[in-house]
Image 1 (cartoon, rainbow, N blue to C red):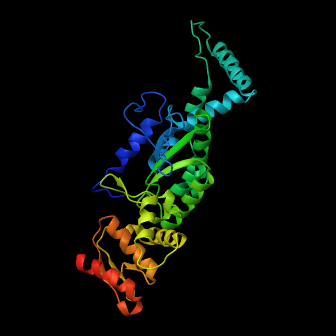
Image 2: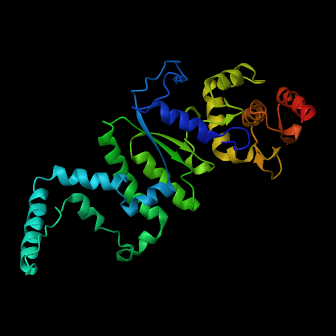
Image 3: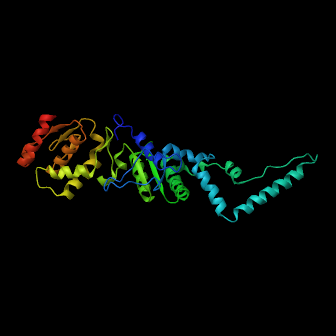
Length: 309
């Protein structure tokens, strides 16, 4: 993402509102699948926006929390649950009769599942691992997805904002593995390389409200190549560049093929794809190239960028 030129949260709010049954913005917004330009129906999904704070707040069991609703659903789906509540209400009446010696006109309120949930709380001390955010997320996120999928009839679209927040790199990798295992459609807004998709087709980079990673980019890379590269080679190189250096492209990096630098690209195809991608995204960079290590056609191709930058 690029927080200075595009407010990604606003774009995601538009997407989220589009896939709402009530108050959808479908009359003002059209969402299409990029590869075939087919319009996506607002009935295709029901979406929800979450972040790590919202997930952690589920442990409070507030009345509007997803976990609260899941507990209620589980209660009503268990045929034995209601008999327990009825027994508790009978005991309440018996207790009231026992203590109401003055025969005051008292009546106990009916005890139900909502009141029962109010009596519950998570006891972190029972498991020391619960002190770690990643453990709490791993415990609760699958349950949230399970409940939301039931509520939305299997049409859940999860929009996850900055999943890397307050997590170490190792914990981020754990969370990404969990997200993949959920088996749902998900949009992730992130500033971390650990949450990027392995295939360029599933990564987005928005700059000045334009999507910079697209099949058109690959087409242009193939068409303008100074050497005879295969499309599969270009796609593989683009994948590698994004996964390794996407977080470096906005800092006017030094690109070198022979020295330690922010971006180090050694093969002709990686240099071509990396430099072209930087130009395509309108980012400044500094080339520090040893032309003797390159084919003549590639060296001449890079000369234009030395002059421009």
